[in-house]
Image 1 (cartoon, helix red, strand yellow):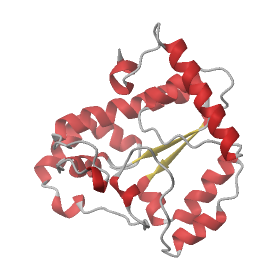
Image 2: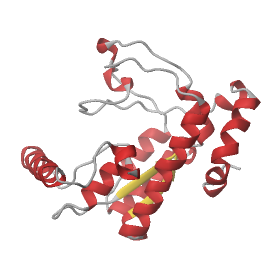
Image 3: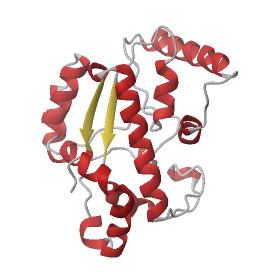
Length: 213
């Protein structure tokens, strides 16, 4: 039930068909792109759990975690549907309690996946560390994936913008001509203390685990 609630898929009767179509998609992407690696930017651990059960996929996971209070502050904002700007559906504000619960469950699922796959197949990266020192963080990721990411890291460290890659869906920033890496910690001064404490009551133990308290 946990897997289904956080991913929208269960490893039931339909999983075999799901696995078949996913494998065909990845094979086609590799063939047409002439690349050796696919970056799947899915944000739900249930997707990774499903991929880990598919034969022929040598998977590595980058667990990107952000201070949950910053996540809650971001999700308190709502947006109207605007297809031209990349908002494919209305985004309704999420309560701090809901975000704290979901943030904790999703990260717990990644912890479970880490134990299942083994620590050599997963690396944890904090949003705050990446935005503060992208060169060092990408060097760490590059070593993990056996890739040279130094040029990208140096470019981001200098504050140079990047062009958005091809994405079917995702953050509305993909619709802009260029993207700059900017650290957003506005929640620290703008989020009411009562809301911060509300998050900490439920997710405080996970905040401590990731070094945020």
